[in-house]
Amino acid sequence: MLNEAKKPVAVTPTNAELWARREQAVPRGVGSMHQRFSAHAENAEIWDVEGKRYIDFATGIAVTNTGHGDPRIVAAVKAQIDAFSHTCFQVTPYESYITLAERLNALAPGDTPKKTIFLTTGAEAVENAVKIARAATGRYGIIAFKGGFHGRTMMGMALTGKVAPYKAGFGPFPQGIYHVPYPVPYHGVTEEMALEGIADLFKADIAPTDVAAIILEPVQGEGGFYAASPAFMKALRELCDQHGILLICDEIQSGFARTGRLFATEHSGVEPDLMTIAKAMAGGFPISGVIGKADVMDAAAPGGLGGTYGGSPLGCTAGLTVLDIIEEDDLCTRAHTIGTLFAQRLEAMKAAGASEIGDIRALGAMIAIEIVKDGNADEPDPARTTEIVKKAAEAGLILLSCGIRGNVIRFLPALTASDEILHEGLDILEAVLKG
Image 1 (cartoon, rainbow, N blue to C red):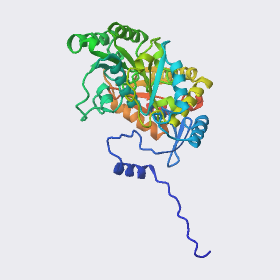
Image 2 (cartoon, one colour):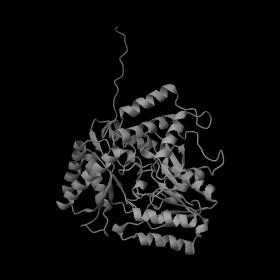
Image 3 (cartoon, rainbow, N blue to C red):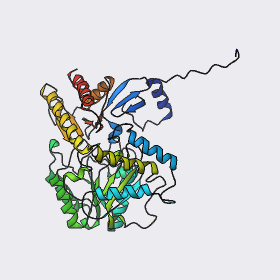
């Protein structure tokens, strides 16, 4: 065996080496908040390629509500792969698509009969919700809210109420889109001002009889985790009913137990006409959807809706398992518990001298703090926000920033994370704030 060739030793690249390759291979328009490359993840923890452990308070932007690698999801998807991975529902359909639609139709807010279409991304769900609304009403106008985020497709960008970085340089956008203020009391924007904004639109820009839909996030995601009150949601429902306008609730970031209800809209008791879903619905497998009142959903002609990968067998199978886990593990109740734990710890940090915390918001486990200078709501501090996120990562905690002013830190822990892990992560945050 003297001439036996030696096997090459595999060398794991470092974070810095991978980042250098990323800079060469991936366009700069695809941002990455952290220069740390994932190698392994389990429930609420991630390990990078260098073996460093992180507590994950980001969950891939509210995607792995059920934690990383839940064995129930893994087993279900493996079984589906053994059967088939793709046939296209529009060619030879499969039962899991229908079963998932049936379950979501039954779980969606309100008593009106529902139907559901599945797609692949959140932006694709938004696009289809607009198509359905226009087909159902014969109208063209869509009213959206400042600070809202609805995706990076052309219609998604048109609906999004923030220019940088989402819309800058990409216009012109689809026509017929109008923006009004979103109520944020912390910023001095009242619900009355938001409703007056819609009334002003009807006077100056578009007749209500030309408006197909009003779209909003019940809790603004990228905009800063501002929740619409039940009173405001009901006022919108009444306004829509008065003028024959459809109400679209974008639940892409707030859905699937994140806020303590399966859907955040449920906190208001309002029944939307259409609802967009994605992110956490399949525990990390790509799938999205539109749930809506059956007569509205049937407005589009055959062939008008769909997509090659829409409602993939893997996504549908994972989605059914996620619904099982939410029920079996009572994750809605767990979300409330997590929200209370975070609020108590964050309030204690603020009371102990973290004057940069200007506001604390928690609807279930959709939690945020607003970083301002000396507690002044009118002086956002995006530089300090960026610093906190960076230093937390160096100490082993993954955070995300957001907000129309770039000064909000959002917390999206796995709903399956233990109290011990949550406190460990908050201990890191507390140390960063003190440092």
